[in-house]
Length: 471
Image 1 (cartoon, rainbow, N blue to C red):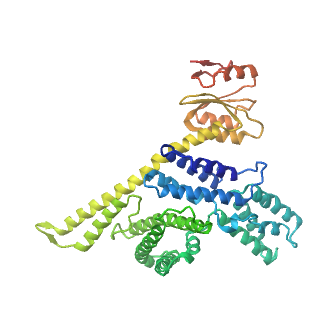
Image 2: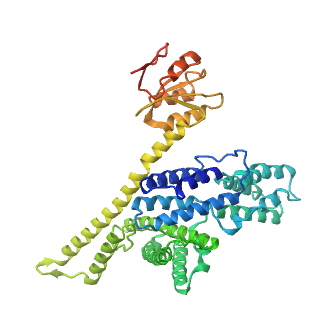
Image 3: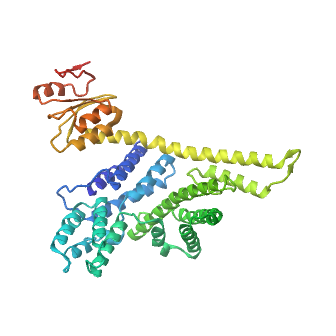
């Protein structure tokens, strides 16, 4: 992961013109998301960058993202992309920027009262990888090992198990994978009394909501509790957003930058949790027969429109419901006002969704194709709007080749495999399902002739003679 962060750092820190900034941010968000979810694995590359290098680069990237975030000319799309990047950056707390971080795993790997084979497994599957090229897969390996050593409670000593649990917690902290409650607890020390009361109220409401039993009697209570939780969330998020308004000074200490990252992740986490609350609120309303109460929590990145909607809701609340308004039925007039406000809220959320859809899908597709074409098992012949390529496959590579043909989607129109393969192989069947021309060829002369067509438009007609002609 260290090399990936270095590439991102070079791309984002100080080298972006405003015209290139959005694209760089979007591709960075996609790339980091795929690394964090394991879609792009982190392999050892022969180097030995300890996790503190990851933390230091993460801090540089975070500072630049915050600088862009606070600039006056930063667009809505850029803000959305930055908010996707932040949760994927590793932590740069002092314990992770130390010269030799995460050393506990080394002590555990040499624990005296555990079997030798377990020591070797910890050393080779976790310790070596963590200290050479840390990545999200290290947390997965640690979770699997923790499940193994806790399966039989008395098989290993309590001290050993406790130390391994601490390692698991440290890796979660390093990977920024704490849940929302844990994240909020971690910033409690930086709150003043007024802010602390808002945090305490939200955590209390959230805990009550998490413990609420699903029953008929609890349904009516859940609607009120959902509203209170959403209102307390908004109050807390307002406090955090206020604290993040000012940009970072050049002389700000590292500890303050690390705390600001915690605040930023809490603010993003609260926004994500608000969508969960809205979903639960909608389900609760449906369960009691439809929309019977008004939801005040309209969240988006369009503050002017949100303010307008909020003012409308407050106006309708203050005016109240009357039997008559002039010669008109008061209930009908109130329903029309309510509908106008709901339509406005719907347009606002639709604009937010469309902004995300305009930003990411096309870039994701482009990135898949670029990763596909840069793979060491792939060479490219001709690229226009469609692609003819050949795979330098080898025995055992079929699953990888299969993923490449499937992931490339409609852009791949022809595949040539440079080895023999059974006609009913998995790869051949999948190529047929994708309606991709699929042939095998081991004739070096024919391959050399076709390589000369690289970058040109070609017509590919698959026959026994395997012709590819220049248009």
